[in-house]
Image 1 (tube, rainbow, N blue to C red):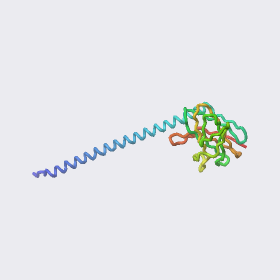
Image 2 (cartoon, rainbow, N blue to C red; image 1 turned 135 degrees about the vertical axis):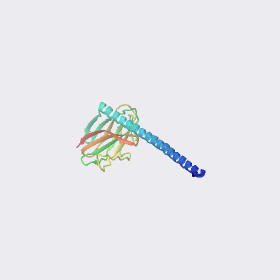
Image 3 (cartoon, rainbow, N blue to C red; image 1 turned 60 degrees about the vertical axis):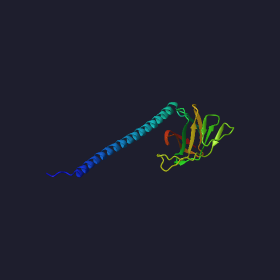
Image 4 (cartoon, rainbow, N blue to C red; image 1 turned 90 degrees about the vertical axis):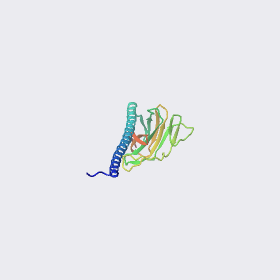
Length: 197
């Protein structure tokens, strides 16, 4: 009978132990990867639920309150905006000319005595302050390919309804789009069709 050499048996034993250790390491790594993926998935789901809850709350509040719109003349519309969840929240108001889907050079006016602020802030001792230009933020909307409308940032601090004055300087059909920014995403929560001219 041949006897196995102790060195060969030791090498086989070490290889077996190394294989077991490699399997254990792989199992532990897989567990950590699985836990990381589970944590990421849960975080993503929580963010999605929060976003959906916020969107639903805004939609329900807006539908319950009704968005007040009054056309003053061929180029001016009064739009009611309300702080829904305690604020401050940043709203974006976009006005599109749907006759040709072109951005509109328009201005926003707000009541200087109210809690409504528009960026950039302008202070003047008059009841209404005209804001020319925009924040420089251009939000592309999927509904309008290759259209980057003029966007105005509006932050609402008070809990009472505020009025914006949207003045479109050209006649045509307009779509006024209200968005809110949350977690670096923009959510459209209301859309109004207006006419001018």
